[in-house]
Length: 254
Image (cartoon, rainbow, N blue to C red):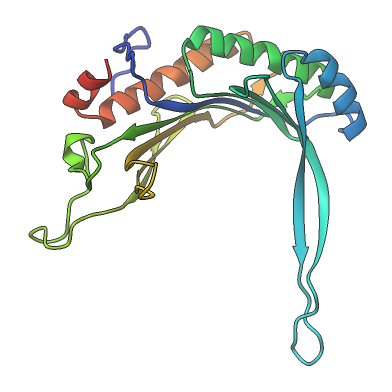
């Protein structure tokens, strides 16, 4: 793959993005207490008034001497806070080990999306004071609605899975996962492709294209190239996404 980060990709007026995420993994150096998080972020994130507590439930199973299981016991550990905008299209997660910003549906502009993510991240870092960013990720999940009947996947995907044998066993579902390394650059790419079946009522069959690009080395908190790195990851995401879809499908999305 040739790396030309100035390459432009087609603008899809019917882009099938259902969620876009920018994620930062970083260990705080100050105590992450629930009350402190709530007080700080409810003040700093006034555009995200809908707050939820994020807990992790741990289930403990034990066996008696006779081999019979004792009743399960669970403990709940506070992990962070989730904030939603009033229209619920933007989501911020402030956790003990990192931060993420999501745009659900109605994704429009990368510059606006990445700019808001960086501004919100800086407010998270101002409270938690991590020494470095252990991982940065850019993830886009796309949902491409297909024909009502089971689709011919070669109409949609450049490397579509094929039916077995002569086609006597039609393919009605699949999940395919690839991980790519980017030579001479500290990035990995996870590409997951899947066929989501119809629910028989409202949901049509759809192809899921899930592209996740992330760094493999830690970054300094004051790294001035962070914005450009996000741009490179976006370029890699686009390169993989557009290479995965057929020309006729891309034409229909313009």
